[in-house]
Image (tube, rainbow, N blue to C red; front, side, top):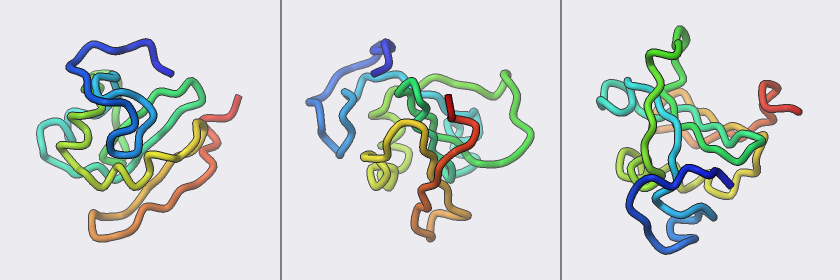
Length: 109
């Protein structure tokens, strides 16, 4: 579990996630500024969550930190991948598609 717990808390297991709502997660500025939807989710092998737009060309300047609860407020459909184990990712082309969970080669030890 991530050691980042910087934001307000909620009851554990609400919305399907094992982590509390105040758990810090990574996102990109496109998602945070509502310019693009969350179309790519990573649950990395260390247990951290990333909620990204899925577009190419990101660098460190695009990274933002949000609370898990905030990711759920941006897009409640991310709860559908809440049980995804570490080392897996989920993607979709648009918000009308179902999430596809896959073994992420970038997350292998």
